[in-house]
Image 1: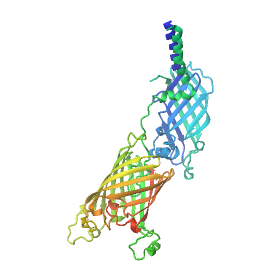
Image 2: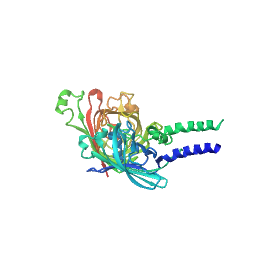
Image 3: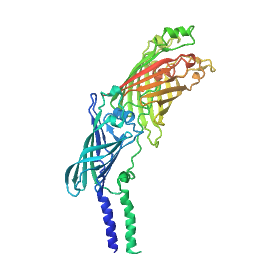
Image 4: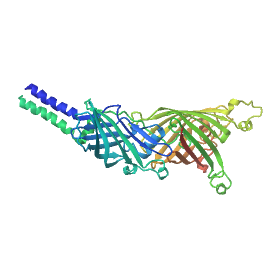
Length: 183
Length: 317
């Protein structure tokens, strides 16, 4: 009988663990790119928090805006200070679901669409983005490239800079996930 | 305890956990054990100077800050016979140039800036260094930013100007043309819209003329003296700020002196992305510490204030 209890407990705990995946540290990058006449605007964020639940296809991300690193430090300061107002809106949050049925038991790659809500610069919008889920061994990879319209999120570009700063920015997620371990 | 009870107990323990993992709380799973370190405060000020005073800010690595600064003439001067007429004649002082300065500051590292400049007043060439030692964090675990600024000035004014009014047979010396300035800059971005700083400073001039402050027990001018500067910025919008700074000179010669005063500047600053425009009024004629700290001979109380501006353009090299 004790064995049964242990078994039940095990099934539950294992079940819970194997369906939750989180970002592998150092192997996750969220980046954006925007072509501009003077100098291309690009930045990479390597410290996003991502949680993915295979049973419900839920995917949630939280990104510290100040962790976007630019090559040009002055650009980084202006990005935080003038456009993203990072002290007021420190995080960008995405909560969504993969629409397709994905078989997480087999290795392989599958194109998916993800629908959810993105909160950025204090504005929350419904978005649907295309992506790819691939599984190799214990790791899941999630890749997506989509466009964000700056004005959708109430990010104001002064008229004199409209030529320098693109209206639409390419955003790229490249996330490697591993089974969640409670630390 | 029966098996059944134990099983129920286990279920009771496990179920809340699984319900915790409903959609809303996925992120809270990891946010609890993902401690992000404190973040560094950025943009305590928008540029390297307030009006007269230095700010805590350095030029970013591999960037060059090109600055053109100007101080016009006094808008009014109650010492004059017909001040109103003079104000009108010089168009509020715009016909005169108290000082003009062109300078270049380059970021060797994000926290180390070197600069050179040349001012009209006293024909002063200067070289400077600013090193940011501490950077404030957003959670105030480090409540201040700290920087060290130092500059050396060399006046290539003609000998006759350097020694004007000094006894004839005075032995000239190249070293007399040099002066030195050092200061600590202690700054804090208290809120998103309010930044303040303190600037304990020391000025040393190799050569001074024998000046006496008759208003204060005939205190003599000294080669070296301390000052305390205070400066601040109040952000009105994302790109427009109200700025001000003031220096208090500690030496007895400067106390209650009716000929030499403490410099005060008040005005606005507009940041446009690549440029920063500082527009303000000040009683100081000089544009560098080596000039405006010891040689401010005008006072706000007599209307002797000048319109001053600085245009800063930063280039990424």
